[in-house]
Image 1: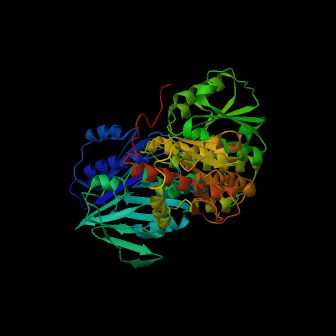
Image 2: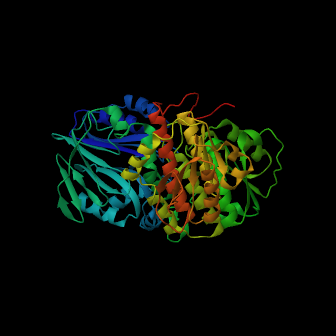
Image 3: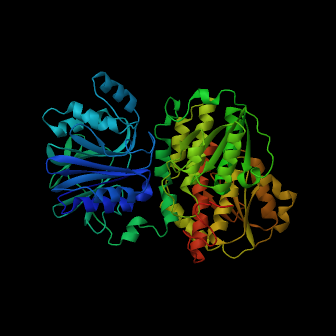
Length: 588
């Protein structure tokens, strides 16, 4: 997740670039930078950390006649968050910003190095500008076309060169919008920077590219096409939320896109690849301990099922606040994994320090580069979920589970490329499904509590579904292994007890179905989520048929998130800022 802006034909391009990046800072704040064509040169200003650092540097730069420019706020994927790795990246006479991952960048880099081209950064993006200059003879647009033809992976690209008053652009797999107001032309990764500046926008489709110079020259498969303009919203707050009622709703819908970013360059037809890891790191490892809190703990529980079943490595999952105050048995053949959205979770950080003192190898699954947990861990896999503004985690949980699934594949030498892609597809929210959940939500507001039940990987999802409902609706809810209901909790069953049953067709179907029948027989009001219709259930949400339980998992995950949100909205709650909670728990 990175943010891109650009403009040409604007009175004060520097102002738009900075203000636009402020609107996109949620997409990344490891570093930021701008490149501006000023008189006869391209001036590049970059800074590490939050955008205010760049803003302060820009104030000290004297511009003579700024004409147009591009900007970027970075969420690090390749290379540490340093000024050298920050965008824009420069060549001898050009500059580029890029969101996405160039999967074949190492191959391109080796080729260019053999041709005598030098590189200074650790990023995949630098190859774009260096390849462009390698191809550039006397026609910049032809050089740009040759460049994007060589790129594999995902990208949204803006490129400028000193010799031409144009901004070149291309889009494949990462969001990019071109917008206009009379002769002013703007670029951005989302609506928010455009509102108040442009009036109409074309949302670029994959494979579209071109350049702007006073008008928009748009191409698809070497054929010039006309932009399809939509009117931009007038409210900035609405634009930030993308037209959704709450950030949480927007983030549920974003899961499809962030999971694509999370798996980009990692889930390949040849198996899982992690630039952050090597096989040597796992030598001598016979056990895994996962330490986490809240939603991250639930993701860890899913990881336990996957790692033990597929990679055959004994795995324990610990609540960090408990682990740090007991005397755990930590042996040096144990890999210690910590999971945190923010990278600042106090209890999780302390367990990490404890493991380091004991001499264990440590691995962090985290969403924020350069956070305390990332700095402390031996290795880190970044989640690439982008910033979550809703306190109740949705897309961070999705990327945590997906990363653990890929890690289990990696350690098992297993290739589930197609299944992972199928799981991503089912997270795309279907509007009719959402509408059904909205209508169902009015029936699930006034009982004495909820049980979410499931077996195997669907037990941690039951825990997570119950937590989501608790956090934002303030209704008591518990997650249970379906087989445990008869060992006590079923005493609560009556028509005012609501049960959400996660019924997998691929794991213990008949046994879980039997557990649902036991609750129905005691008059519990039951909502079943499954690919197979269950006649005795009060309500039913059908998911797609699949042969892989993790595909079911991700589709059920979206349903439980939407259900919690719609119940809370019906009750008049602010789902983004639930009472008594904070996004990042940095104290005990």
